[in-house]
Length: 504
Image 1 (cartoon, rainbow, N blue to C red):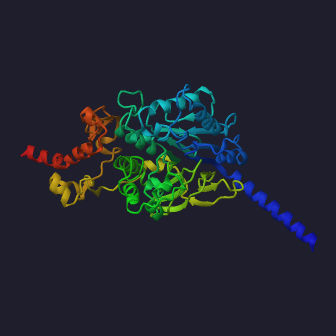
Image 2 (cartoon, rainbow, N blue to C red; image 1 turned 90 degrees about the vertical axis):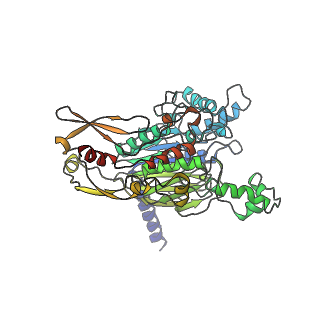
Image 3 (cartoon, rainbow, N blue to C red; image 1 turned 90 degrees about the horizontal axis):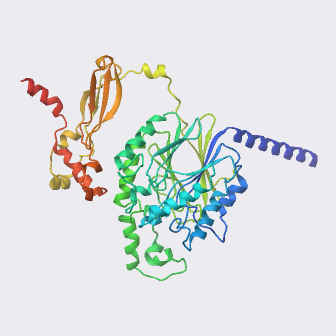
């Protein structure tokens, strides 16, 4: 009997090994997500040590993303600063995971790399970038460079594109590169336009949108405070400070829950960032947004958009499960996106207590990468003759806004009308886009027919950009919103009415 049990155990072991090996062979790409890794614990880094021990970094299918806050507490000071050695040791530990290996690693900036948003933050970030660059490691980069906001797309395989954005640029109140800089994208409008172009350029690839700040979170930056913080608020500063401060202690948690500081999802500037990014990527099932910032592990889904928070690279804090939560844990660890050869996608979460890559604390499958349409299918696509659309839904408002800012033509802007579909393949005998045009408030597309005649498609809604504002009001979101709302005073269908009046 013992003999049969022995053979059975051997067979099970061989089967398990073959099954694991087959799974590994099916992986086309693994992207390791480690956020907020910028702190050592007794001169060690448990997450980096785990990755060094359990992952083959000579395997080029593995990619490591450090999702910002790479150096606590205030980024990398100048070499003469007394804190330089400590900052260097922190970044060196993270670099050591892939140093002299074949796999690639990328760093993105976080608010702590920008000196927590304070003056001198750009200099601290540039110190970090310069140090990484000075090591001349061909497989390691900090992106986007120079404090630029991005987006910057990097194709890492035939199935995956990573789009790097410096989300702290949006929230930085001091010394961020602007219209005077050499950055490819200099304003919020430029960034959003560039992101749209990138998203539409890769319909058949997984697009990993990497930035430090998450679109959604149910951690501290998402306003999660328990009864403990209301009664013993000082425990957030020091876990041992159990000083009861009822009522008075609720002021700070309620402020963070309702309004937030600029690094919280409830703050107007953060909401501006979130809403503009979300407006671009919603509906694109091949986009996953990944971030750190909150020191927890989370997987969230809002409609078709999946978002990963992997910010417990060096510490963990409380987290709750909310409306969009699929998974949440306050464990020190990281997340991994696995893209299979057949285009299927898995999301795995690990803690530092996981035994190996097969020991996840949570795993799930996401929709597969969309199949690429061949040119023949695209060319034969039939469009309807007409569709019903609204000119703009942003001017829909309640009674208070109408009272304060005017009734205007809000009803006309927000009422669906039936319009003919403009197909550039057939209109005017076929048109070819030549270039993007427009001024500070108008976006347009120039088209050319087969005889060289030029046509222009122009948006009916004015687009208020920073370039249209006085210099002292650039970056003031409330002012821009008020000016943008003024567009509702213009009639959206004047272009249809005027020709009839002119003819008469």
